[in-house]
Length: 114
Length: 118
Image (cartoon, rainbow over all chains, first blue to last red; front, top):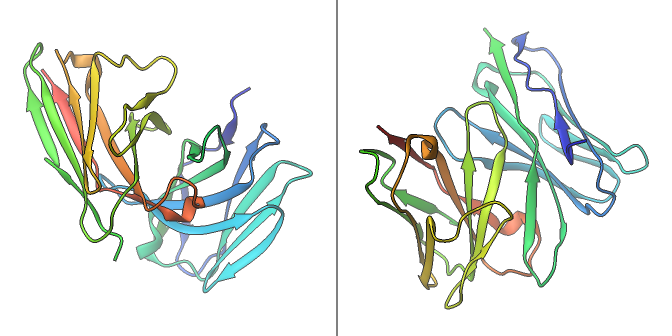
């Protein structure tokens, strides 16, 4: 079993739809949970991060973490064509020394159609 | 703030040659830099972690003699792919951290370098 599982999609939705993206993981040592957005041929940019279980909201984006189920979600409300990108979940925990090593999912390709 | 650049953005080289990729933190000092490789429709895979002034720590399965990493200053790290082969063709992304002990929100990614080996 891979450490982080993410459905690669592709996912296509109409503008204004609510988008739900999910990841599951197996390593119970993960402490930080992140969502990155990556446009084609670009580096990832951090959208949201949460520490441990709970919800976090930022504008149209809501991140949820359920550590008991080892399941994280990202919800996008009122989706826009500009949200079209690949969304990567990532997780980390303190790993030896003081560096935080990120483990990424494969990414879900999202297309929001006008 | 927190801008990371990479150069070149795209490089095509012949098999057997070496290629150097630069990663710079433009407006902050990066004590730690990370190098990732991303294949199409695959995850970002961490290759190595480097701290300024010390040797890089490579992930299991990554050949340190093939992927040479130098982190000579707080704003520059370089990755050299030596004797490149077509299977080394990939998207290489660096990230920089303001402190190795900070949370993941302190890891800023560069725009990536697409390497094609003919």
